[in-house]
Image 1 (cartoon, protein in one colour):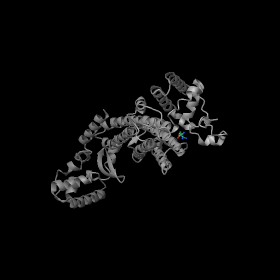
Image 2 (cartoon, rainbow, N blue to C red):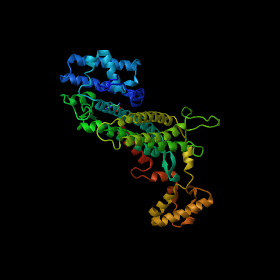
Image 3 (cartoon, rainbow, N blue to C red):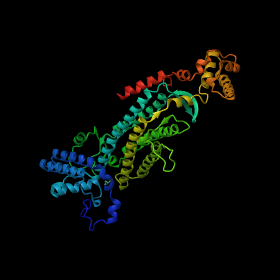
Image 4 (cartoon, rainbow, N blue to C red):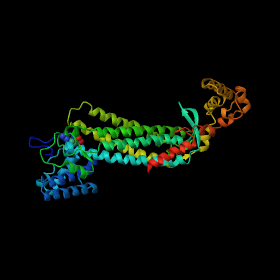
Length: 459
Ligand code: ARG
């Protein structure tokens, strides 16, 4: 009879129930957290004289052996044990005997145990994901530093808008990823409370020391209310939300990489190591990496919505529905980690085609706003009128078949006699980019200031 079935049962569980009820096939991933928690629990029980010193020693040694067996691949996972908690406890009792092994679960329930294991897992990954994002930011920053003067068209509505530099464009993404890191860190701080010691839902009559366990496991606080603690999966929702937001940022960047690597743009070229081929068209190199990054955002949103839906309307406290929390989180965490790794590699190894970026700036009259600004600043013309005059200039340039930045002085003066000789200094693409020198703007000097801020933060 399975360990979780007390004397109240006369018959064993059906095979079908075992398969349906078990979380072991996926929660075995939590073995380290589970054993770590049990060691801290047993140590505390001995400290409180709830267990004898030598009993706790045997339990700890037994748990260490279980850990070794799992890591060596010797451990036999049996689905009828239901979950990792019961599987570890059963093996412990086989090793040190039922008499002492059976004492480990004193003053504890699987409800607070799973809340602990799962929280330890998410906390570890809040950190791991932050570190991986940081690595990617470093890669982007390195490229940014080499491209503070590389012109490319800044867009709105995917239409050429104003000339910007490539570093400035990358710093937009760096800013997003920096906020992502801050979100993971905030979630870490909020989840930094020990759930263990809440037992099934209402605490325990045993004289436990939760503060000691918190210290042992690296939590800075003990949770306030047991009923909340065993019901709470906010920390899981938060990591799912944080991953979803990060993946949305990755997806937007991936989309740009896909566009930029197309024949129409050729702003970037992915290295062969991170490009894929077509099974029929031999000439093709495809951006599958970027497409999968974009696609996987959908998958992690799905995990987030799934857990919200599972938790909605659950009465307090623990309900078995909550076992559905793990696969969603495991999948999103693993997806996030591999996405960050490959994104970093693909970007690190791609070629940036500065020439093509620059050439693209000569299409679309990117310095039109500069002509309007010139008319306002130098000729004291109201902006609305300047806007209209510039429109006529663009129409004239189109008729001539040139970009506004390539129009001669004579042609410009034909549009409005107030236009002076100094106008060409304004229409030049570099000048246009550098004119936007306001804080956070695209000028090279403003971009360098943004880089300096990020470097300071990275320290
Ligand atoms: N395997 C369960 C889960 O993942 C552990 C908690 C079981 N608790 C219970 N009262 N049945 O949620």
